[in-house]
Image 1 (cartoon, one colour):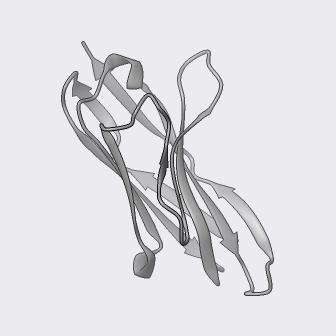
Image 2 (tube, one colour; image 1 turned 45 degrees about the vertical axis):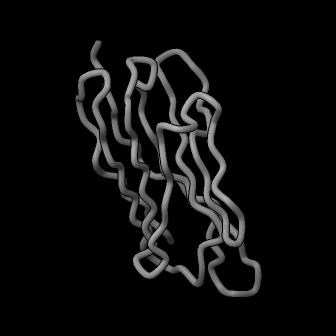
Image 3 (tube, one colour; image 1 turned 90 degrees about the horizontal axis):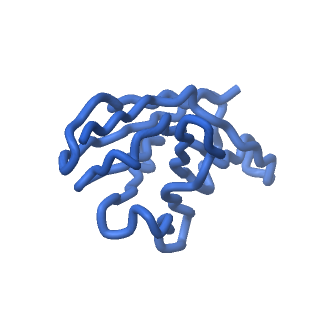
Length: 121
């Protein structure tokens, strides 16, 4: 099994910054992609940022220029640097990882438990 553990959420004023971290552990051969999603109250979960091996990061239009995703492959960790935060960024942020368990394309997708980000106006 694979576990994803997020950290770094909290309460911040508008215009502030937060850095989220997500560490993957367990039966991992390699990680093909790691992403951040968010879900605001009463809304559907949406993709915020994604990084896939060999490709440039991808961002939701609403966060381009403010958020930055990065990975430390040696630590199986993905980060989300969030700057110039807005009240509409308030949501539970979830880490997602596409994991190859064996090296023979045994691909499974895993989710973290989520971390709350609240931006006050």
